[in-house]
Structure formats: C-alpha cells, structure tokens
Amino acid sequence: MTLVPYSSITIKENNEPLVDLETLDLKVEPKYFQAGLSETQKMFLREGVAQKLLNVQKKLKGLKFKIWDGFRPRKVQDNIYQKYWSELKTAHPEWDDETLRLKVGAFVSPGYQKDRIPPHATGGTVDLTLIDANGKELDMGTEFDCFEAKAAAFFYEIYRNYPEIQKNKQILREAMLTENFTLDEEEWWHFDYGNQTWALKMGADFASYGEIESNMNE
Image 1 (spheres, rainbow, N blue to C red):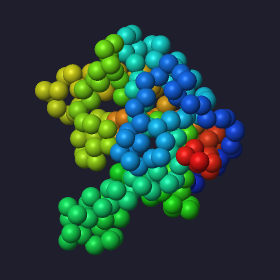
Image 2: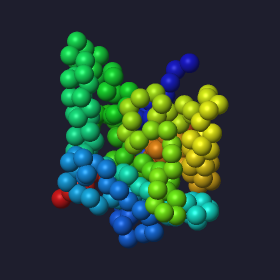
Image 3: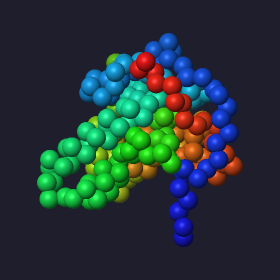
C-alpha cells in the first residue's frame, strides 16, 4: 500500500483571516514564547477554527480549553526543529546526520522544507488540553511536546491501570470530533482542521487553508 503524502493534496485557499485568541473566551498559554522560540506571546488561529473551538467548549460541561499553540510561522517551526536536533545530538553523539534527521523528523517537521507546508503554518492546527473550573490541567499522561511513544493519542488505552488518563483523553478526542477536527495519533494535543493534513485524513477533495506567509512577529 502506497502512503499518500499530505503535501500532494490540492489547496483552494478560502482566505479566512486569523483571529487573536486572547480576544475570545479561550485560555492561552504561549509555550513557545515562554521557551524563547517565538518573539510574540500572541496566538492566532483561522477564524473558522477558533469558532469551532468555542462551539466545542460549550459542550464540555465545566471544562475549558487551554491553547498552547496555533498559527506558527516557519521561523518558529525551524526554531523548534533546531532545538530538538541539538538536544538529540547532545544526548546521542554517536548518531550521524541522517539518523538525527529521521529521529527529529519523527516528531518535528523542518521549518523550511519547500515542498511541504508545516500544518501549523496554515492557521488550521491547534495544540491544546483541557482544564477544570479551577484552571488545573487534566491528566493526559504526558506534558506538551513530550517526544516519546507515550505521547500518542491511544498509548494508554492498552493498559488497565490508567482509567483517569484514558477518560480525560477520550473526552478531549470525542469533543474535538464533534466539530470535525482530525487528531494526530502521535501527539494527543494536536488537532487539525481545513489544512492538507485534515483533508487527507477526511478524504476531502481539497484543503481550504494553505500557508499564511505573513509573519505575525513583524
């Protein structure tokens, strides 16, 4: 079976604008700004994606979203890639560049790969979790950007002794599916809508969100 790369999906850009998430009823925590990888603490998503999150949040019965990342320009994507590359190179000095490329690429896309649009660069990808009425994050089994097997969306489903984690992840997944988001099976916090990754998983004829090339840091 030949796997179809998401980059082969046709884009019919609908020119939907980005919206500032701080202007909406959404809790934001700009992880990459806090880590020094982004120059701005503002976070943005396509208007339709933000509205879908608000629709989902109304169904969560006392829970709310905490958004860690949304639109991500290529510069920030490359900063994340280079950081992870450096961490793995330090941890595994015996690895050559090809091995590093494969290991890093398993979790982080290169920022400047010309024939591939990083999903976050479309404004259609969001990284998030759930918080309770006191603002406490629900236990999902790992922290954000945990580059290990246990970060997978269904990792804990094979065990019987993690009922709380299983329940929390199920609530998040099922809530997002009600608004036709697709999940990333390798990262429980990552969801897509409208971009090429989403279109491929949904079997859609085309993606509505292409790359937003304007840099929100400027």
